[in-house]
Amino acid sequence: MFFLCLKLLRSGCSQAFTRLTIWLAIIGIFLGVMTLNAVTSVMNGFQAEVQKKLFGIAQHVVVRYYLPVDKDDDLDFLQNQPHIQSVSPFLITAGVLKNQSQAVPAMLLGVDPSSVHYDQLLFDPQVIKQLKPGSFQMIPGYELSRSLYLNSGDRPFLLTASHSSSLLMDVNLKRLNYAQAVNFKVGKNLEEKLAFMHIDDLRAILNLDQKISGFNLQLDDLYEAPAVKKAISSHFSAKALVTDWTEQYAELFSALRLQKTALSVILALIVIIALFNLTTGQVMLVNDKRSAIAIMLTCGISKWQLTRLFLYQALIISAIGVVLGSISGYWLAENIGQWVRYFEDRFGLTLISNKVYLIDYLPSQFHLFDAMVIAGLTLALALIACIYPAYLARETHPASVLRYE
Image 1 (tube, one colour):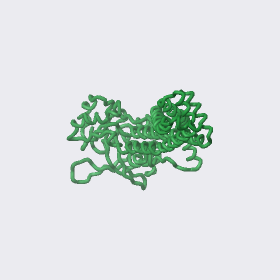
Image 2 (image 1 turned 180 degrees about the vertical axis):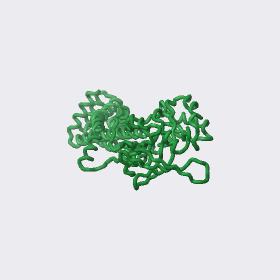
Image 3 (image 1 turned 180 degrees about the horizontal axis):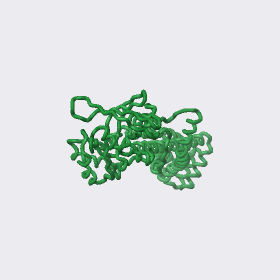
Image 4 (image 1 turned 90 degrees about the vertical axis):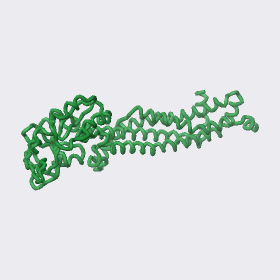
């Protein structure tokens, strides 16, 4: 049956227009599959890199107290919960940083260098370790350090409000150290307003002995964050707000998924148009080979076998495009990041800005499962597209066709 299918297809391609239609179908399927594989790989890579960047600075679950509390109040409770890998206390406050003639608002985050777990792609492991109690050293974001014109050795002023319950507005003024030109880069929104300090130094500035603002929880599986949040929320309901990463960045990841889906649907139209060409080519092949079809029916081939014959032809034609498209899509996905970087350097363009996204390059992750789904759906649509030509072939009446032969 397979060799008969190839022979019929080869003889049908002797007609110029039929051959052109079939080749257009193959090229269309090839381009559609290649583009779909490349785009899904880029979106997979982009989502993975954004997620990695976010979790370099954000935590899986955050417990934020309404008012500063003693560190030991809930530490044992959290450490005994399942899936919680580490518990890191933090203290956060808003203030104004002033250096020379520049003054900007900032968020000061006090952390314990021995317990923080920030992504090593965002921080050199030794950077956070430089925060020593009593040094009053800060590590500002890159944009914040630029706004303040900070240089190594500068000692900017920090102005913060007191946490006293008094009606009078007390303020705290302290000089910080920027001994080494060290900062972090995680995206403009955080870089322009966030600075790190040792938690003991920030406590001393705010006169909050052993007080914390909350806990950052690192889990063994980040997808357990909603379940962990639900499990501990009742314990903190009256004194703290518990959030997880799915709430904090739900809009971002929903937008990325929507963008991936929309691009896939739009690019799938290329494949659908190619399948229309495939249907047209198969209909023309049926009309050109009506005599051969009638002879095969006369010789005893069943209508079901004839239907399978044309469905096999559709599989062969679409499989050529799918295989070539998948290979080319993999190659394109592996190299597209380098090409984008080359065009940016060559023409002085900024196609991907870290002021908009958290990254300034085009990542890519080729997933075999996605490629198999694209290939499987394309082959399934090709079979559906050739049902009508196969139906025309099986409805051929040998007596009517061979009467004048």
